[in-house]
Amino acid sequence: MTPLFTTLLKRKTINKGLTESNVLSLSYGRIITRDVSTNTGLLPESFETYQIVEPNNLVLRLTDLQNDWTSLRCGLVTQKGIITSAYLALTPLDAIMPEYAYYLLHAYDLLKVFYGMGGGVRQSLNFVDLKWMPLLLPPIEEQHSIIKHLNSKLQLINQTIQSLADANVQLKTYRQSLISEVVTGKIDVREFEVKGVDTSA
Image: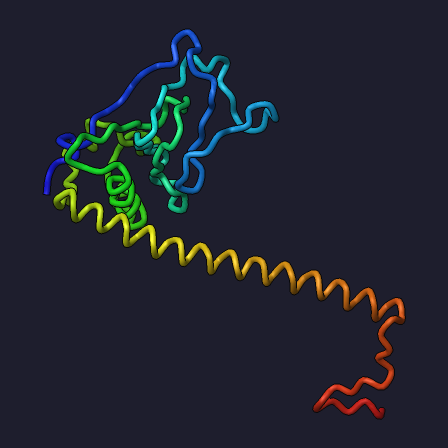
């Protein structure tokens, strides 16, 4: 066990002079590229107020803890870009692997650990509130094994989800085709009998 600040440092590099233009967003536990050309959602007057993040940084959204119990609040950065300064960005040190740190904080998030912390009108957390949070820190070799195991299991789960989604699309397509062919008379259902239902009346 070790306090968070011994393995994760606060990062705060402001995008002064608009040196970076790749706008990122935290969405359902993933850091994604945001399309600002559509003008959907809230946008700042200037992206100079945003902070620069690098691959393997961690981003945490720790505001409105009392109102929102469904959002996923932790993401792992995979590309250089900028993200709102309202989020907390962390840089892992050598003692902790970035992907392990993400999985650990993601587990804390799923267990709603952050929701018992914080204060203020919006019940928020900052690095000072978080720095003494205890982290489970096994040796690097064990961290690597945990990452490998989780990645393997998640890949299988994602493949299953995709297979079910594909099957659902195929069923909807078949349903629409069946309705169309019956309505247009391509399939004759006049002699069709439903088992257990008396259609003689």
